[in-house]
Length: 98
Image 1 (tube, rainbow, N blue to C red):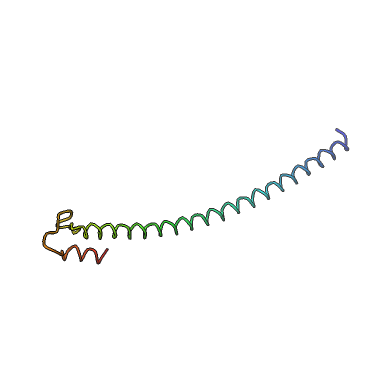
Image 2 (cartoon, one colour; image 1 turned 90 degrees about the vertical axis):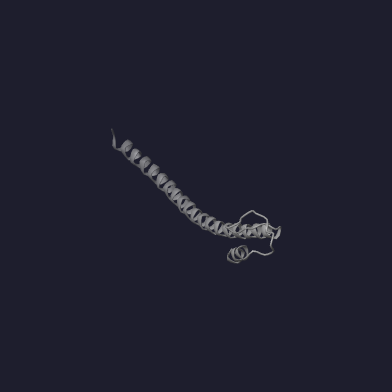
């Protein structure tokens, strides 16, 4: 193996190493971008879940209020039975807490 071919091989190897190093830099930047996006999406997901739970709770309370207004008990003592004697203090207490 002569000196000239050895220098050519080293030069080629250096060029390939430079290209690989540049590609590694691009991959590293892409990983950083993906990690930042993942963090942002996790925060948004947490915020949306919290809002959804509040909406679900409000909808549940509204449903119970509607059932009570239609003349049925919503308290644990007589749930689902007709209210025949006016207002039920247990139901009203439950609605105030919900």
